[in-house]
Length: 348
Image (tube, rainbow, N blue to C red; front, side):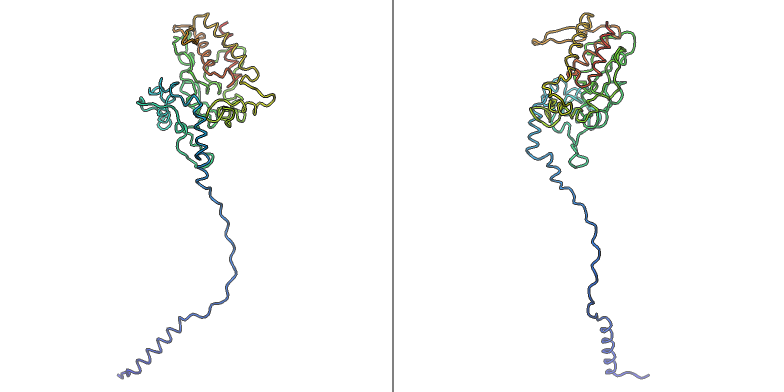
C-alpha cells in the first residue's frame, strides 16, 4: 500500500476548505419586492381612567354627596335608630343590613352598630366597567316580602327602590282568609310600600264599581322617565331630583307638557285622593276600627285591635296603605282611585 506524502495531504485539505467556503458564500441582494396589503385597523380601546371619572371625578362625587345630604335616606334617626339593628328589620333600616341582604339574600343576625345609608349601600361592585355600569346591587324584578302578591317588575334600576319600598304583610284576606279577621295595631302594609302602589299590587282589591287596572300598567311605569328613577332622580335642579330623591317638578312638566305645574297635584289627583281618604277615615272612626291619638301636637291614627268582619279589616289595611304611600294617588292614580272608591262602597 502506497502512502501519500505529507505535502499531498496538505494540498488536498486546502482544496476541500476552498470548495466548502465557496458553496455557502452569498451573492449580491436582488431588488426589493412590492409592498404587501395593509392589515385591518383595530378599534381604539376605552380609556379606563376616563370611564371611571365619569362618576368618580372629585366634584361630581361631592355634588352627589351634597344632594344625598338633603335626602331622608341620609338620616339615621328616621329608621336606623329605631330598627336598624334588628335582624328582622335591618335589611332596609341600616346600611349593614341592606348590604348583607344584597350579598347573602338574608340578614345574618342583629347588627351591633347600625349606620345610615351611604353611597356603598346601593352601589356595590362594578360588573361591566363602562359608562352605564352604576354597580347597583339589585335590579332584577322584586319578589315581594308579603305572600301571594306575585313578582313585581318596576323596570331596571327602579327595582332597587322596590326592594325596600314594599309591603311587609299581606292584605287580611290573603294573610288569613275567612269571614272575620283579628285586627292588630299593625294591620297595614308598612310605612313605605310605594312599590306596591306603583305596580298596582298588594292592597285589598274589594269588588266594586271601579275596575282595577292591570298590574304594572301605571303610566309611571310605562312612560319614559316616569319611573322611580325618572321622577325622583331626574337631573338635579331647583333642589329636586338627583340623589336628593325629592321628586322633580321639572321632570313632571317635561313628561306631561302643557301648562307647567307648580306642585304635584297634576289633574287634581291629590285633591280627589285626599277627599276619599278623609271619607274613609271618618267611616273607620265611626265603626270603631281605628283610634285617634295626639303625639307632640300631631294627630295620628292606628288600627284598633279586635276581631272584625273581613271587609272591615281590608278597609283598614287599604286606608293605611294609601295614606302611608304619601303620594296621594300620584304614583298610580287609577289603582288608588279603584281601591278607595270600592272600599267606601263596601263599607256603605
